[in-house]
Length: 76
Image 1 (cartoon, rainbow, N blue to C red):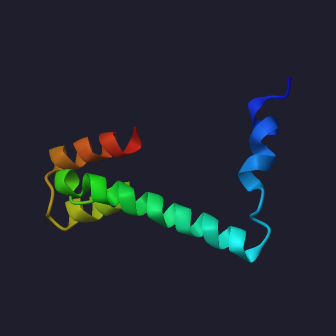
Image 2 (image 1 turned 90 degrees about the vertical axis):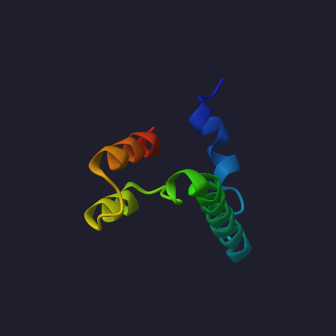
């Protein structure tokens, strides 16, 4: 039996050599990010990136404790 990475690597990259395949991958990534922001919007204002949370902390929109809790949740 082949290891997982070798057995499924061709399935993960199949079709990405064409322009349509690359566009499909880009749209799927954008949709996944959109869903992540939409799900977390009511809880954290849509912060899914620790850098955005850091900017909100520096800008005074978050307390240090809340920023720390957001970072823990974002990095898990």
